[in-house]
Image 1: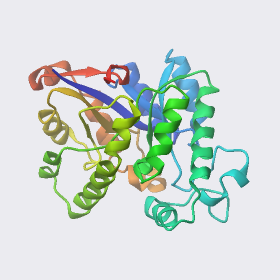
Image 2: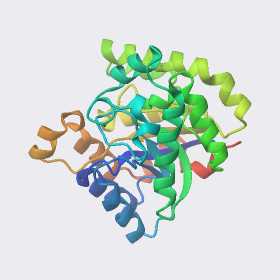
Image 3: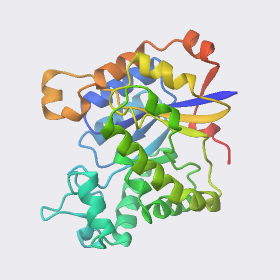
Image 4: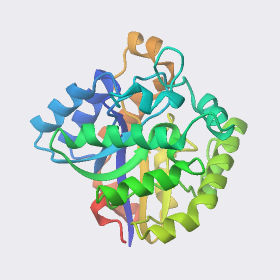
Length: 283
């Protein structure tokens, strides 16, 4: 049977995202979410989850985006920070610094560990690990994610390998370049994943169409889900003009929220898809 994890990413990044994820959990439209320990609205997200009685959550590791680190010892993470003591602004900036040898993998480990500790300190059981901009898939960093998963007994690390069929809907040159780079990273990490013994899904969805999953795209993606467990990542938010002006990368997050709000069982039944949680990923 085709099974699908519907996950909301970036929880804790802003109150607008928190509000959207709360709606989706309350309506039972998602089966998981990834909490960002470095997000500016992390504590608000924690309070929201506790108000809903949610005791399990994923960790959305971040080391980009200009966010502030979770590790209190700045000397232990200095090589992944800019001159102002924050993370570098974007994925490409960090990837260039890391692949050029200027970011210490020990510092990446220290920061990721501090982020997991911050979530656990709030009393949550951690269902999975993923990362902002899929930075955990960089060579060497993927091993760090798997190592931490084993150390903390976290059963699942996102492996964002998208099936090739996704490129045939709303094709864009920039999107296919990102798709190709991520796919190569996944292929390089496949052997490491198999050796780890951690749970693995049959496929991942939502990167090629990240930030622009409308109803048509979602139903197209559902049609490609085959036997096994798949995961799809949404980025919902309760948007306003002020929110989009501040965070233009979330311009279509209101559309993604509306897709989730309008999701009904008839669509899933028609496509032969059952919604499951991260706990259902086989080892």
